[in-house]
Image 1 (cartoon, rainbow, N blue to C red):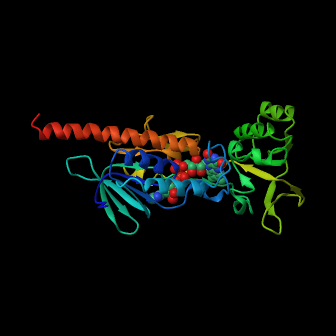
Image 2: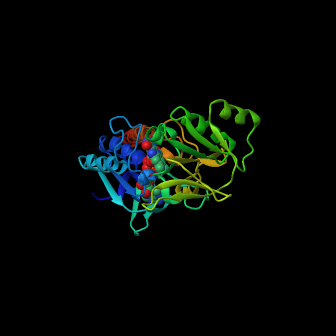
Image 3: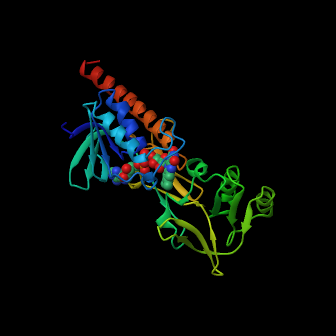
Length: 316
Ligand SMILES: Cc1cc2nc3c(=O)[nH]c(=O)nc-3n(C[C@H](O)[C@H](O)[C@H](O)COP(=O)(O)OP(=O)(O)OC[C@H]3O[C@@H](n4cnc5c(N)ncnc54)[C@H](O)[C@@H]3O)c2cc1C
């Protein structure tokens, strides 16, 4: 496919980006998906809560999505990174997209589906277990450790909610409260539901000889074994392209999120976004749904433009 005059360039080929490409490909749009190949959940062996794919590999899902797109001759997927996207001063709405490899493309619209980066708490030994013994989402990874020994390492007092969700799955939940300002009501709520409060400071997440999670070491040098450690990473949207294009953002929970409407339109005409790049809550099914809505919305917007162009050409 000649990819120099495209309808849409999709930046990011995770659940959101590939789902949008599917809708656009089925509408005979000319689409290029540029994907850096680092989906957020690549560290996880299995994904959960994804109907029809529960407990399967997240990378297998994306490989299947890419294979499905091969049926649509208007869609191409390349492994590369988008370095910049700029609006062209051409009269019509159009963008130039430059890739890290040096390739350049022009497109009528762009969809940013670049996901987010999890900024983990700075505890020695913790990051090596990320996605295996150290996880964040009770809905994604809680069932697997039901009735097990679960540690919660909160970032703020609001993470008491995470501990309460996990208490539904196991009677052995330990909430590590050192360094937190925990309101008395929150403390009372945790205690009332049988969630243990641990006030000793955590110094390290420790591993077994086979590199599996063993547990937590405390400031007094003692250790305690756990089957899983739940943390609350700080989400950092991978939104450099959106920021450079001037998309409006709103601060929520200390993070600036690009604002989109229900279909994925940002405040910048022609620039769309979907999935984790605009929402921390977007699980795989939610990212897929957002991509699906954006794909249909983009096609509708392009169709309106096609009609205007056709009418003008017909002298209307
Ligand atoms: C440890 C862990 C476990 C999880 N488990 C589950 C689970 O069990 N169930 C569930 O539903 N969800 C789970 N999630 C959440 C899941 O990862 C997200 O819902 C999903 O990845 C969001 O899809 P996305 O398309 O928005 O972003 P991503 O999947 O992150 O895809 C973004 C893509 O954009 C690419 N990209 C970024 N920047 C650029 C650029 N400049 N140019 C080109 N490409 C770029 C990246 O390389 C990546 O391939 C988990 C997350 C984590 C961290």
